Length: 172
Image 1 (tube, helix red, strand yellow):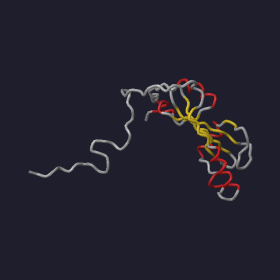
Image 2 (cartoon, helix red, strand yellow):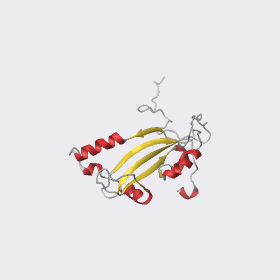
Image 3 (cartoon, helix red, strand yellow):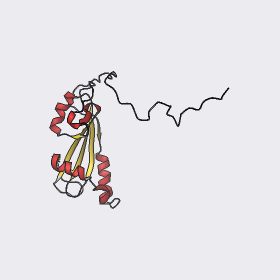
Image 4 (cartoon, helix red, strand yellow):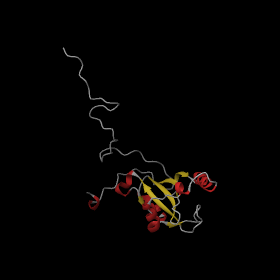
């Protein structure tokens, strides 16, 4: 009689299982609805103002290099130039008036439109159309390339929905 057969287990993943998380299918049940009083009112707000102040203190007191903090990605600079909204004040690093805010939205329900830039005025309509999505607001200076994540928050009416289908023109 032969000994026990060796299995194809390496680490913690058993044979036939994948290490990547499984994408939800259209047959999976949706999670229960979340009670939301006002869909357009931000919830789970994270304000990064203290981190911004600490970074500026390091910059102005010689603890940090301007190249460490003023290093915006070319795509972010382009997004700020073409889709950014004027900020309330000047750039905190160079005091130039050319400071813009760029708002990104992320969420499973957005489907292929997750990670896109949206104007602030569009968010109220989106919050009634989708159940849950995250909003990231970044400030960007065109002159010195300062960029910093200002705030993140969640919007939506709390009713889970299936992801938007990918349009035919986006398919490869």
